[in-house]
Image (tube, rainbow over all chains, first blue to last red; front, side):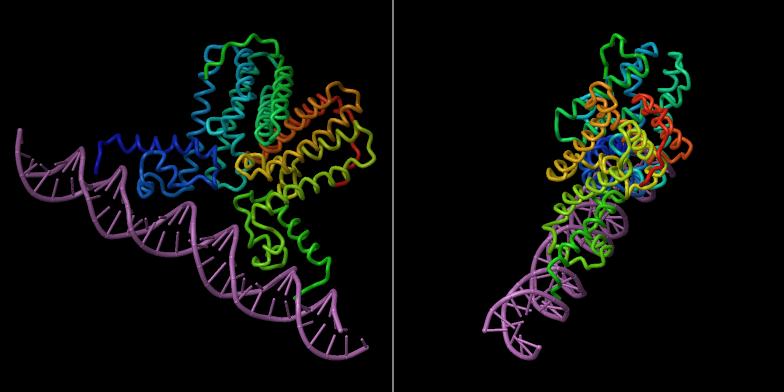
Length: 203
Length: 203
DNA sequence: TGTACATCAGTGAACGCGCGTTCACTGATGTAC
DNA sequence: TGTACATCAGTGAACGCGCGTTCACTGATGTAC
């Protein structure tokens, strides 16, 4: 059954969107071609009309995830001045909601442990995504007038990543909440945005 | 071939030590029974004389890793006063050496992404290990006279974990070093131990 | 406008490999006498 | 002290399942005339 021109691209995009969630939820080893294709409403045989291999899919999925994350970030802070943007982003990142939504969350938290074991392509695209995110944060930080914004952005982001990663890893709910709360406060204090009146998150 | 009484325990311990490295290096999905047994100088069939299943091995390996880490921590800071202990631990943790030695490093960094997908036993033991580590840090912090040491310990540890995790995940070496350096400085500053004259790490 | 043919996204059975697990067997050591 | 027997850690072949990949086939749509 041959379909219209654009249909192949739509299908491909649908597969990538499904894969983006599955990759964060199940990790690069457990995510399966059969399962992803079924979730996209197809059978597994057709997979190879779109991707050279599972590894190729994974590498492209990394781009997809970072693109989705960047888009979400844009939506959340849209129109806010730098200090509000920072505070809002930190609050939405270091949150119980983010902790509980791995499949829709930040790829750095979901995939960092797996990275050293992935293909070069996968790692490179991941690296690009991370750099872009750091740059975005650094720009906001620079706009608030704090010195050495790149360094600050790096260490702030890594603290955010660590907090959500640990909050997910720990089974004790009290400890998990405490981890988030402590990290959120300390990061915002460090950036001098702990006093910012929050705009409602628009995620 | 039946061997002496203690030999079984020795073998079991050898397997656990091998598994402890392999688990951190390869992750819970890629680590293999055949490979671990071979590295311990045995054939795979004998595995089930020691462990009920691969999952059972993984759960016990978590304990093994946290025990090794705790032992190493003790060795590193042995005899140092609290502020020196803190500074030394942070320096050895948030370091290029730790980043480059996943198989001998902190299990939180190596395994956090995989945790939500592991067995209950695995998660519980992991949780215990994390708690113990936070308590140790909290004790040192309390001894330096800083308030709310539990909270501070949580957020400091999560920042350390995030820094090493990201430094490992990123392919760009400059960015990786920068991440470590920025995190290390900021964490030590926050704890007021950035000025501490370092004892030589004895790891 | 209508007809014949070509294309190729998608189907579903089958293949092959890796890996966790099982099992019959071995033989060194411990125990009973 | 010496002999016969029992034990069971460890061996290695085999099994079975899941999963990535292949492949012959289908049939809706695009193109040529």
